[in-house]
Length: 505
Length: 69
Image 1 (tube, rainbow over the protein chains, first blue to last red):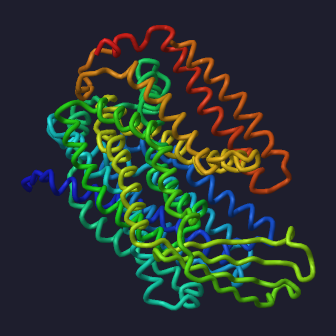
Image 2: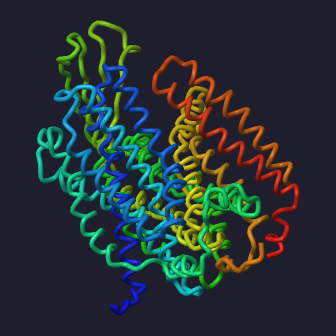
Image 3: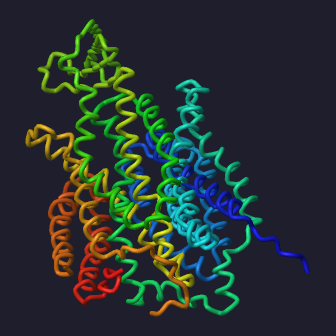
């Protein structure tokens, strides 16, 4: 009989984190390349293709992730953590690679958007199953007094996945011409993923099953029906609801605001050029990521609850001043303009339109570019103006600092939450029970943020509110405030020890 | 406190349908239709149902043991 080698904790963390990071990368590149993908697969002049595009955008994040959580959570509690999150890794890697291989709409017609939609849904399913498995796997290997620190490595993976996706896309764009990237280069980030997945697969293949699950299996304490025990059993279901409304709901909106809303606010509301926005996000994420580990470590000392609640409270109180300050960096009133150059050209399509380009340069280095499309011979009320701004170095570093502060909020609410969720549920239904509130809190509450925030901003603009650009923040502020209140009232103040199969029900 | 959460669930249902769901369903825009369907038939049931049940449990004292830490 061969000797069983005990897997070291660093190896467990490395294997889990690497795979989870790759899965986040796979999920993010689709969103980051959505504009290119839509032109290749979902031509807007075809209503059905456009409909499938919308489904791919919304359904993958909102609906499918929680289903993935249920499907793979159940599997993980029945057959084990290790094999289940091998399956999610291979499913995600395979789906991502195949997205890169699907011929465009021009080559295979309607089959193209259908295939991409299906593959995107598979990505959502896989992601729904991955996080719960990875967090549970690491937590069940960790000593009790270091569980927060150990699982915080998993918490870095979503941000690192975003970081790597931005890097790979930027690197690919830099190496190719614009035409080459648009033509075939956009496939590279998808195809590259299979190499990363293969390496991660080789690493995970040699890992052992979680010791707590293995023990539960040997002693016959695994659940026969994890779904029923998780959600049909009032004693456990109340904790699922408490996890959602007292922690993950607030964590989801703070997470989404600090990373995605900040990015889209700079690009779409402040009109800063994309390459500057990407650079600002990269640096803020780079500086902020180590704090996941810090707050995970701190939660082992002072408890999970206080750090998560503090993160939510500070975010609630400071979002509006932060975003007000961000917006001020592109306010050119009061800046000294040193030149304004305008050129007019006739638009080729449709003929008759004219384009007026104006470039305004300011003494502090800010460059403002404006393009107005006007119908020939008609009054200006049919014109459309787009603006793009390149900020100076001082403003850039101000924005990096302000986004970095928001990333700190993210690390406070997200760093300890894996340990928090794992500790709430017994081993036999842990994967199922923790995965669902996590993906509802992040997928549903976080995923709703762009749509709700956009609605609030447009509403404010139409009624002429002075600070209309801040109105979108009421959604994360409101949700995080409610979650903070519920968490403060209902979550226990002491460190929550791992609920195990011997706990009194 | 449980009643507060149940009432909040009812409020979310009201605003969710009248402000987001229904206007999106009838706007005529395809993207709005998909979003409206998801809001009304997937997201609102999860959020409202969850809040109401959470409130019910809180009202019944199910979380009192945890509050005492």
